[in-house]
Length: 176
Length: 176
Image 1: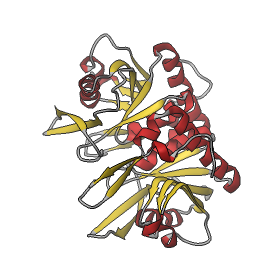
Image 2 (image 1 turned 135 degrees about the vertical axis):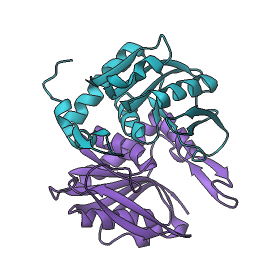
Image 3 (image 1 turned 30 degrees about the vertical axis):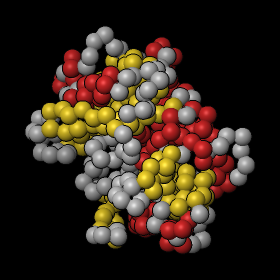
């Protein structure tokens, strides 16, 4: 996508984080840049125009940054998906495998009770494990998944192929 | 503050979370309610009009929800303050005491290098320990703290008195 604002130029590359051999794409300079960040939210707003979600779901914790900014801009409600034990009240959870070990995501059981259309947003699509687990969680909680939006995607990791068909997946910045 | 929207009515009380004897104020129904949430951000926007910050800082992870929503609405940049080891690149940290044990907050060392005015936002002001530590961190990183904004405050816990003078502290919902 061609824009007047170079979003990619506002992403900082940090070698060997969080461990040796990993080139980390640091989106914080983009979040700190008012014009760049407005453009991120504008582009994700276009995705909302297309997919017409009723709610935005963001995955803890960088997905909160993208998700609430978007939800506020498009005047929708926001629902957090969190690490285990963080959400009060009745929760629905899903366990999923990581490269080493496993993890768990939770959502409040009544959060999607209206059965509305849910857009999942996160900062980065990497292996797709977390986003795929979030999709499973949304279905388990009675929500109606309508698509995914990411600020950046590491395409070489194949995360897009792990996400459930036929839901659209949009990433604003794609690294090969 | 009198508003047409009853923000307090959108907060859910959950007894015995995260441990027995604690009455947890759950703000997620407010985040999920588009009109309620727009009103939260509108009121925090009025605080921004008054304090004229250059940047919004939000504390991981529920402070991300409030902070980025506000930053996006008022067209400012957002800077995350995170738990240790989460932020890439050079970081500045501060250790602080909790009721049991201690914790640490970090910020990227260059995030506030321009010396601008910083508004700290979080969902809840309770004992004030985390917000006071965040204030210390902002000063250590070269920022110019201009005030605090919270969605809710548990006034009986006296958190407001732990925050550094003379910075204004605004909470939209105050519980006695």
